[in-house]
Length: 82
Ligand code: SF4
Ligand code: SF4
Image (cartoon, rainbow, N blue to C red; front, top):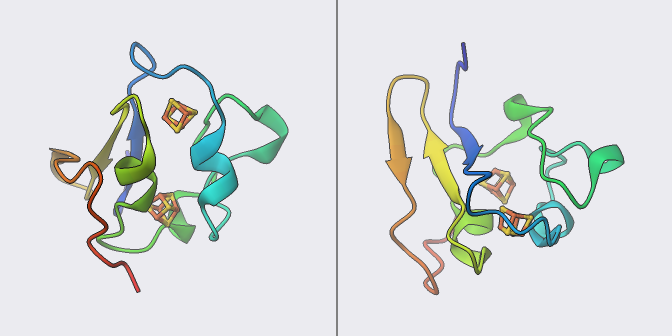
């Protein structure tokens, strides 16, 4: 079970463009699987960051905080992850 904030990929929407893998500066995704986004190092994800979800043109990324899953509702608006 996931323990902390991390992206959850909706593979029914994902077009495997690989953009989220390239833009994440924290090596959350498994680059060897690119362009398919596979969350390999969820511990690297920054609490509250929704950058990859904001930038995904297919709206295919939601977030899990260890308890609940959240829809990324901020398409086209950066919330500022720091
Ligand atoms: S940016 Fe979106 S569509 Fe592209 S690989 Fe990531 S989740 Fe899939
Ligand atoms: S939410 Fe931020 S830190 Fe986490 S995978 Fe996406 S871009 Fe990387």
